[in-house]
Image (tube, rainbow, N blue to C red; front, side, top):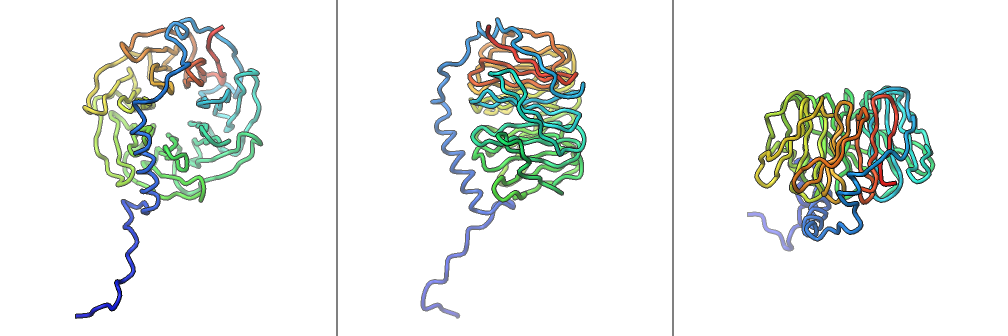
Length: 340
């Protein structure tokens, strides 16, 4: 037998499901940190149910050519991003109630926008199938991810480390994209067209919307670990609560609330039309729903409706501490609601 006078060099850790060991270690460390502190999250200073019930219109601004728009509200700054059929992402200062930058480059409708919570970046994706990243301070294009999809981007969601994000497409693929290397570090193909995507706040579970169901994925192994069936039509929007337990899904007729501990639905909220968007606030105390000609806000203890706003809502997003609600509309406008 062959012997070694000294131990051989240790083999590098094996990659997990296409992700190298360094990335897996980073994802695991952030997951452990966040899940440990989740019950200790502070909700100090969050708007009260009474304040949300009394919300009024603070501003109404035409942001895009009349068309279906999407919206993202920064988690700690008075900064909003919208995207529309004109191929632009536009930034808006909610303190001054004025647009600040127009970010071009997209060919066709921008379906999803996402403001990074800790870096001056905004992500966008849409009909041309190319996820893009712009700087929010200068308004310049920073990164373009070419050749990761062959059809429209239908979902953008930031990974908990803040270093990666997932882009999902109607071509049946989802990819984990690296903000530092500007490369796709992993891509998962399939035959099912995705209509939405959202990462769990702890970063290791991805939910994707398809026709009639939601599929849950283990990001590290890329295995489809569960499915939530019983939806009508495509699941066009998803939102995880920061409490880590609840997932809201919107389909052609209602919002379903799912308990991730039991993998079961426990509540449905009827909608007047196909649900365009759902969004929990950062505290997990409130849920906003945009459907048809209305946007509604619900508190998450009894799921009672606090307010109904008459607006053709195509996107909804809470501002910091749930003090404001941004609604993007079917005619290219941005409506801001809040206290007087």
